[in-house]
Length: 174
Image (cartoon, rainbow, N blue to C red; front, side, top):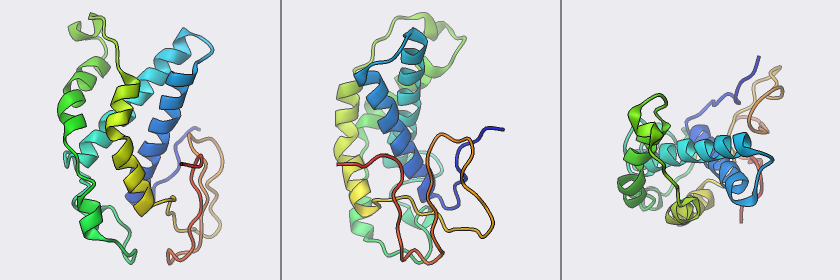
């Protein structure tokens, strides 16, 4: 069986999306082994980019400005800083085209399309950096007797409940 890591609190979903976007961005911009890997990297980038621009533009069920829905209870937050993360330009510029492109087996899919991955990422870079400053690591309460290992698309480290200790998630971010 294959799965992604269990997301015990909603902030884990956002942090996962950011890490996956970074991974795919690095694969797209630094090279791949073959065409199939390049296609997977590009589609992964577009998928996670779309998910994040929806979140940061307040579209979808998790919205950046509605932090009570995704920040774990008991975690101190600066609501003004969180609301300052809201950005709509990447959503307005790219979301619809990405959705059309990712819909396989449609007439839209046959149209040649190139993506300015570097430019798109640049549009979101500051927002992602500011989010990471507020929430620098993955927050997953540990469940006794349960393992987060096995097959997954990310590495997860757990800690005791209470959010007093934080642990790294994925690659180090600058």
